[in-house]
Each structure stands twice: as C-alpha cells, then as structure tokens.
Length: 319
Image (cartoon, rainbow, N blue to C red; front, side, top):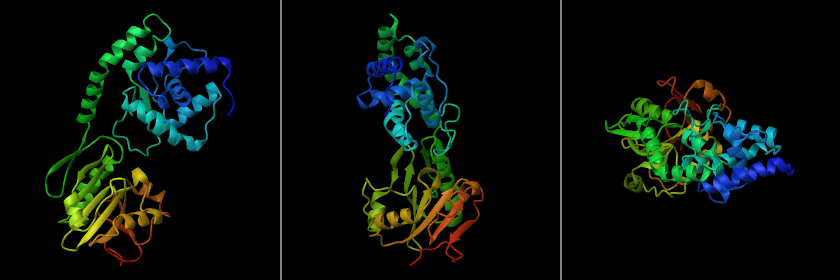
C-alpha cells in the first residue's frame, strides 16, 4: 500500500491522538479509523481543525474522500470493514449519528449516511489550541448525558406495531423494522390467521421478542449464534412454522439461506414454510432470479397477494 506523504501522515497521526483522547481503543484509533474521522470532518490536509465540518456522508463517499484527499485507496470490499469496525463503534460512542435526515431509512438504502454529532464537532474544532484539553474533559464528563439524550430521541422514534393477539410491541427505529412492522400487521392477518408470533428479529436487539419455550415445545433449540429469520410464526392448526426474511436486511431466501434455515430448524416437529418479504415489487425485481424454489415471496406494497415459487397455488410447506 502506498505510503502517505509527510503532511498527510502528520494529519492522520493527529486524528489518531484525537480518537485516543476521546476514549477510542487501538482498533478504533488506527490509521483506517483516523482517515474515516477526517473524511467525516471534511478535513483535508490543507484545512485547519477549526475548519472541520460535519456533512452527512455514506460509506462510499467516505472512502472516496480518503482516496482523493489522502491518496489511500481501499478495495471496494473494505466498505464492510469500515462499517463494522469503525463506523459502528463511532455510533456506539455517540461520536457519530446515523441518518439524522431520515432515522427510519431502510438499512439497505443507498442514502444511508453518517454525521459527526454537533457536540463532538465543537470539541474537535479546538484541537491544537489551548482550549482542547478543557473541551475534551467537559465533553467526556457530559457524554453519559449526551448518550441518554440521543437514546431518548431514538426511543421516541421507535416503531410501534400490533401483534396478531392484539398486544403492542415496539421496535428500534430504522433498519428493516419498517418492513418488519408490515410483515406483522399486514402479512400475518392475511396469510397466517390464528398464528402465534414466536420470534421477531429487531434490527437493534436480535432477541427482543423470543418465545424460547414455545419453540422448544416444537423441538427447536435455537443456538443464539445461529442466524435466525426475521420473523417466525407458528400455525397450530396446520402445525407449520412460517419463517419470514425481511429481504431489506440480509437478502431473500435464496438456495443458500434456505439450506441454512432448514439446518437451523432441522429438529422441528412442525413443517417449514419459507417466505421472502420485500418493501416493494421494485425491490423484489432485483432478486427475482435468486429466490429459492419451494419458497414464497410477499411484497408490502401489494399486501393481498403472494408469489409462489414452484407451482402450488397456496402457501404451504413442501415435503
């Protein structure tokens, strides 16, 4: 990998020291994370820290900035590393917020973005001045309160849904949860009437709704490291387990995913039904050639209809 020039190297080292001062560990204050911070601040080598800004940037825009301004080019498959091992931790530390312009944005949206918080920006603009250390100390002392405030804001944006039995439940905002709400409130009454919700995979809390005992009664012992479907419905009168994937999160039930689910639920005494759920037919068209045979498709923008892959007219398991 090409070496940074002297000015770029010094700026990156400054950014690493900034991250360390804000409490980031070694992984979150390495060169990659420092470059991500500089991109989020729109801080080229020629600008001073006082000129730092906080534009809303997607991962691709961040990597393009790093390439154009610092000459460090990462392979396209590095975007996931940047998201998982830098941006996610920046969000957790409340250094960065996601989608401030549209908190309910689907997780697979090309408009997904990140922004340095206003509070952090004020501190970072003081780097290199006599006010820096005092600003950092004040910021860190106030950070628990800032985290609580942002958490309260997220709580207000929670997605409210009504379960088939009439009880209320809430999901964290964003991700696939808007689609998940439609799956529970639109799909279930139409296609699984009388069904029992046994699992809901909240984007922000994997095990937020998990009827472990009910699944155990069907001889299903779930490994908590297993990749669960987004929604599991049990139809007692048919003895079916309907496994639904919100295709906006991890993609549809393709042949690989179907095999994974079959293995995960291999001990089930109930027959398995696979359903890929999409927010719209336009989104479905992107995956139309990847859907597994012997499975079903449902689109939230046409909630009264289903698409069945393999000739049988109605929702049913395949033996």
